[in-house]
Each structure stands twice: as C-alpha cells, then as structure tokens.
Image (cartoon, rainbow, N blue to C red; front, top):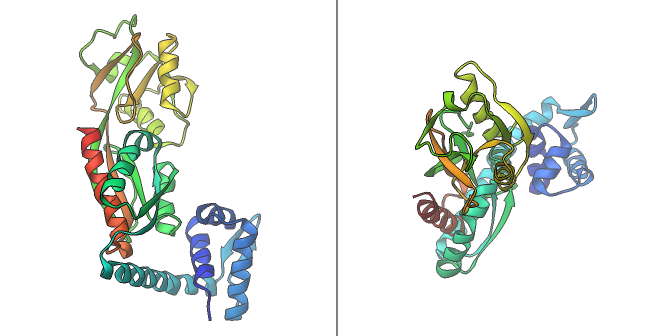
Length: 302
C-alpha cells in the first residue's frame, strides 16, 4: 500500500522545487524526505525523481503520481475534517503560519479567545513571511496562515485555498521629534524623496512596497540600514539616523522622542487575511481559530 506520508513529501517536493525546501516545510530532515520518496519508488516500481545539477526534477511518472496524490490527500483531509465535524467540538492541534507584527499584535488575543471559547484547541504558531506562509499552507505543513499584502501589490493565492480578509493595517512614516516633518499632519511621497531610510530585507513584501512607492514617482529610496524587526527601525529613528515606514499593527507605544506621521499620497496600507485549505473547511478546530483570528483582527485593526 502506498504511504500517504510519503505521498505528501513528494507533493511538497513538486510544489517547492527541492527536497531541502520540502523537508523544511514539513519539518523533516532532507534524508527523511529522500527515504520516503525511495520507499514510494519501491512501492510503485518506477523512478519518481531525477537529478539535475544540484537539484532534482520529477520524472513523468512522478508528475503523474503527484497529480493523483493531490486529489487523494485532499480527500483524506476532507474525510478527517468531516469525521471531526460530526462531533462538532473544536478539539485538536492547529498549526498556523503568521507574519511578525500579527504574531505580536493579534496572536496573544487569539490565544485568550481560544482559552475562553475553545479550550480543547491547541494552537502551534510559526513566524513566517506571507509568501512562504502561502506555500506552507498549500503544501500541507501548516493548517492556516495569517498573511498581508500591500495595496495594490498582489499576493498570489492558489485555487485550493480559502481566503478571509480580516482587516486593513496602515503604516506611518516614523521620524525623530526634531525632524523637519515631525509636525506635519500628513505626508506625500514627494515629501520624503530625499530622506534616508531603514528597511526590512530586500525580497520581503514590506521592502517591495517601499521600493514601489518610490518607483511610482521615478525614484529609488535611499536605504542606509536593513533590519528585520520594526522595533529596530524605531530605535534607529530615535537615534536621529533615518526615517522608517512602520505599520501600526503590533507597533506598540512609540518613544517620546519619535513621531508617527500618516502618508496619504499614496495611502500606505496593507490587507490582512487568513487563509486555509478548502479541504479543511468543516474542521471545528480550524473554524474556531479562524473565528478567533477574525474577531481579534477587528479589535486590533480598528
């Protein structure tokens, strides 16, 4: 009999492009994923992967098997959700991928809501950026994700995922109290063209938005520092070194020597959404988490 765990590993390799990426997403070692696929090859009697340079490609047989495996794994997930739904009690472990400021600004409240209304649900959270979080849910390593995208930059969502928009988070330009813009009621991108910035790492959605905001007026931001944490951005602003574009969600109270000024041309806002696989739509535990996320997001983003 074909091992469904090994099938999930093969599907993850097909979706994520490598054994290493599949192992990371599924929390296995690369050797464990390789062994699972070798077991599949032994069970099916065909080669499923072939080497290409330092990576791997699925053979024609491998691609054919993953097409059928996706349907089979989805049906197994629907069956499990349906069986749990018969009891109607939200019980079990739910694994969630969540971006950093939502982890800080939303998740603690979600845990409180679950403790009060669904104490049988155990939430396991991992901090993951939105693009990777979408892949993690689609590949099955996580049950749901909290993601964001800066308007109007798109975040590609696969067809097998359900999406619920839960709020809109605004970002402000953060400046030192002595800065020439500190007393402005609002800003446009033209006001900050010549400023020096701190940004999150290139390749992240937040960095992409900052670059796009400048590209729309034919410029590039002058980025002096790169730092992962927005708290670091605020500290650098407080030292009078740079300005920063920092979302309000999870930001907390700013230091006394720092000011937040809205930027309205263009409006700097991101849509916050929750997504999960359609096959898990009848899971009481997942639905309890989605409801708690929705309620807490409304409270945090209002």
